[in-house]
Image 1 (cartoon, rainbow, N blue to C red):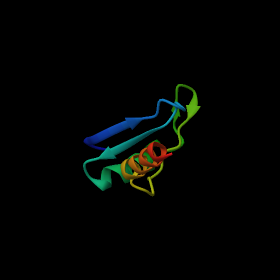
Image 2 (tube, helix red, strand yellow; image 1 turned 90 degrees about the vertical axis):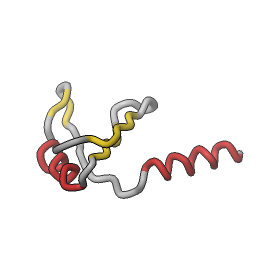
Image 3 (cartoon, one colour; image 1 turned 45 degrees about the horizontal axis):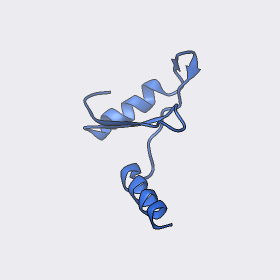
Image 4 (spheres, rainbow, N blue to C red; image 1 turned 45 degrees about the vertical axis):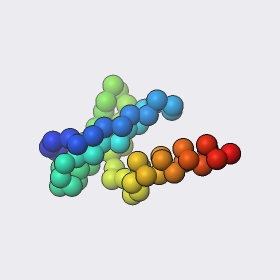
Length: 67
């Protein structure tokens, strides 16, 4: 784990977030050391994102505006 570049936390539904680290090695460390740990008595699932969530969020927003 290391310096964080950005954090995006969901409002609806709550309970998940996207964390972008400055270096990918820090993201891999976060998965390795934090996945399965407990946060507020809940098991955390920490995994790498497979898509660029910002681009996907922008695309979804544009699709909603078009309808």
